[in-house]
Length: 238
Image 1: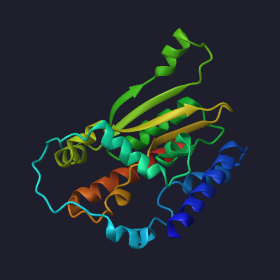
Image 2 (image 1 turned 120 degrees about the vertical axis):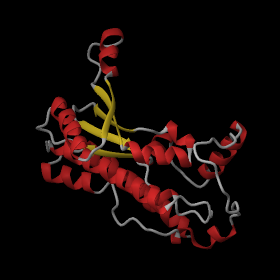
Image 3 (image 1 turned 180 degrees about the vertical axis):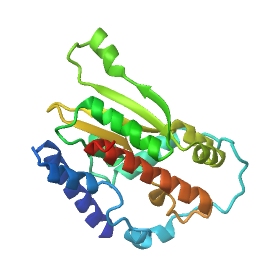
Image 4 (image 1 turned 45 degrees about the vertical axis):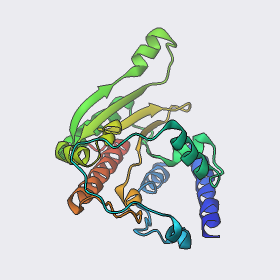
């Protein structure tokens, strides 16, 4: 029953989010929307799983060598795992992607360039090193559609934390560095998006192979810094 209630709650969140995303809002409403996307009543436990979590087998405690890859999983194993999850998740692919993304609305008086400059400025304040800036919309306008909406991707990194994460899981190279997308929607609204990767979700498994306390706190701090960068850009805070 707890899982059913969770699914109902998530479905409600998706509906409310869709309505909020398409409405014309005041500055106060936009700020309220932006504040709800991270760490609002986030539980530090897995109580919502109920007794089901007690019956799922897990690996024993293992030592690992730094900066090494795990054995790959087969495509069939991955597909069966994901399909077993999706049998309890009545969401579309678009819904599932929405679940994995954190997003902020920029205030309507801000230009695209002002949002970009705010991102860079706040990242510098937080010692998040810029590691890339891509502007694919320029190519799209040249080769596909002169009116193609603007979209840019900026990458930032806490280099020491990155190295420690890769020592723990070299597979994390697929997700690094931290990337923020700046996009313009069909209504000319500017949005900021990022992968909503939060170690507090992923390190609650009963599996005994935990990350170190230092790496956990570093990963949390990076996620909080990305949130601060996006908030600053959404409000034009240089």
